[in-house]
Amino acid sequence: MKKLLLVISASLIAVFSFAQENQPIKKDWSHVKLTGRANDHFMIQFGSANWAQAVDSLSPKGSSRSFNFYVMLDKPFKSDPRFSVAFGAGVGTDHYFFTAKNITLTDQRFPLRIQNVKDTNHFDKYKLAVAYLEIPVELRFCLNPENTDKSFKVAVGVKVGMLADAHTKGKGWVDKSNALVAGYSETFLQKQKGKYFFNSNRIVGTIRGGYGNISLYANYQLGNLVKEGLGPTAKPYSIGLTISGL
View 1: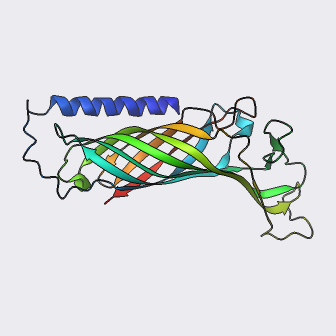
View 2 (view 1 turned 45 degrees about the vertical axis):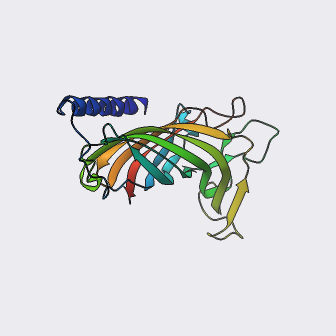
View 3 (view 1 turned 135 degrees about the vertical axis):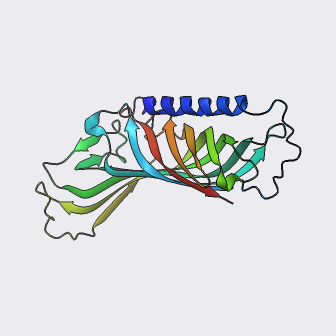
């Protein structure tokens, strides 16, 4: 993941440099009309999520995913409206799925454990979900500031988040051969809530680039998901699609 972020970062720097070098000297931006400009006032992101630096046997599996929604304000630079600063607020969520695992979310006597339960009764479907209230800030670049809906765009930024919810949810109580345990239905659910083991705040580095209202993004959490000394190392990241507009 770090290598991917370095590649994307280098590409964005190259784009910024190219744009600067290929513009007329002292271009007069006073005649640029931004009244019809779409400022990407909302952003919806959906992507694949996982953990970096985690032991493989403890890492999420399957269709782990991330879903984020933000409302943004975009402020173009008067000296060069191709560049702008955007900031806003929203919600970021991550859903991590596990196979034949149990997370000791409510047992505060010991550090957080991700237990292998494949040889005993366990949930057929099991996930850990976390949700954050977030403030994103981006430095944006758009080749055509007068019509951003038909232009190449890139952005780098950071999100500061506060943990709002953490819970596990299991569905379908099965035995070691993955057959339903007698007396339980496929719809049997168990949900446990607890924020004790998780850092209450997070900082996430963000990069995205695309054309018009569609872009690809990559997010990487700079700190650990779990509090130091209270569980395994896990630095969340996600890669996916951003839809923006208005």
